[in-house]
Structure formats: structure tokens, C-alpha cells
Image (cartoon, rainbow, N blue to C red; front, top):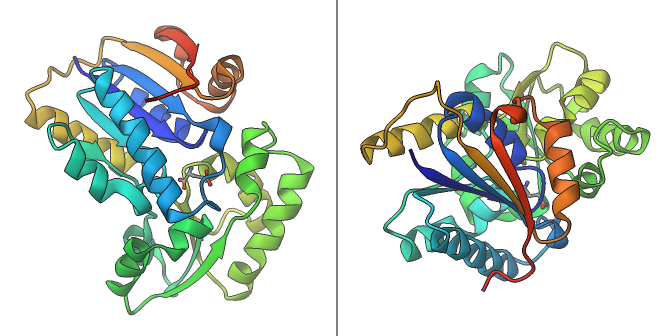
Length: 268
Ligand code: DGL
């Protein structure tokens, strides 16, 4: 069995943890939510890079065999430096799924909803440049992460803000929408309400966890998914709320795992 560290600015990475528990329930997980600092998406590149490094170093010091940077923003700003620094363990990142989206789109018009920092990053521009034949309508989801963090993914205010953000994507005639932030899969219901069932929604959690699985297999870690490992929830803000939100937002049956939660206010 392995110990896997998963981190995000807040509850968004729970969408990745959920998929990890579905595919690889036998491992032990530490989920670290830096909710005191959410949202990351409107912070500077330097800040995001430093904080992401600090949190990954903390997870590595807890003995993690692999770390999932379950945040598109942190991946865009910091993954290369983290891989460089922690070269002894696999570091798996998350990127907006624009390649699968381009493949799934029938009309070649794809909306990308992500944080401002992700959309502005060099990594994202480089990814876009590999797909010149597709039209991407980029939209920063400003204000959505704080609402999801506040437990209002299905709330009226979220629906209104989301409608504003989706308008240019809808007007451009996109038939596919990339959920380019790990918080946004929790908006699926609201997006369906606004855009209907015909639009393809693309999130990469399944592929990201398959990548983790390959890395663990390459390390010779035993895989036995009849077992259920433990999950430790660590929050920089409020462990109780994180614990509660995990039960609310995730589909996995957390009762099958041994669960702990913990408040950590300094990661150095
Ligand atoms: N969930 C994160 C992402 O995937 C970060 C959102 C934020 O904190 O702004 O980009």
C-alpha cells in the first residue's frame, strides 16, 4: 500500500480524491486543503509557486509515496519546480482537459472555464498552441471558488454568477466545456441547469488518477482494491468544516475508510 498526498487551495481537490478512492481505495490518503488561502486563482504566480512548494514539502515530510497537485492553478505555476525539488517521488498534476475536449467537440468550439492564473500561465498558452485547429473561448471563473468553499455550489448566487461567466461561451456556440479548475466539477448540476444536457463537460480526474495508478505500479506498490485505506483531512482553516464538506461533496462512501481530520496552521 502507499500513502498518497493530495493538495488543493481548498475543497476542489476533493473531486480528484473522490476519483482516487473509486479507482484506488486500498491506499492511505492525506488530503490537504489550504482553505485559509483560497482562492489561489487570483494570487500572484510567485505566491502560488512558493506556497505550493511549501505544502508539497510538508506532504513529502509526512512520508507520502506520491503527491497529487489536485489544483490546475498550482500545477500551472509550480509543478516543474516541485518535481525538481522532490525528484524522489512521483508528482502528478492536473491540467485543463483541452485535448480531450478538442477531440470530443463536433463543431470545434470549446469553452474553457478556469482560474485567471491558469488562463494567464505560460503552461496553459503552450498547451493551447498545440491545438491550432480548435477555437477556445476562455473564461475566468472569478468568484466561483469562494462560493463553493462556502458550501453554496447549488445556491442561487452561484447560479447567477455562473450564468454571467457562461454567457460568452454559450454565445460563441461551444458544444464542449472544459472544467479547468478542480472546484468546478461540483458545479455540474448548476451548469446542466443553465446549459442543458447537450454540452459535453470535460474534467480530467479519471485520467489523472489513471496516471497515479501507473506511477504506483511502476514503483511496485501492491494494488488490491478489496481493501479500504485511511483518509486524513488536513485544513489550514477549519478541519471540522472540511470533514463535513467532504461528506457532502464526495460520492465515495467515506464510511468505508478510517477518517481523521486535523487543523494545521503552519507547514514549515
Ligand atoms: N481548485 C483550484 C484549481 O484547480 C484552485 C482554485 C482557486 O483556489 O482559485 O485551479
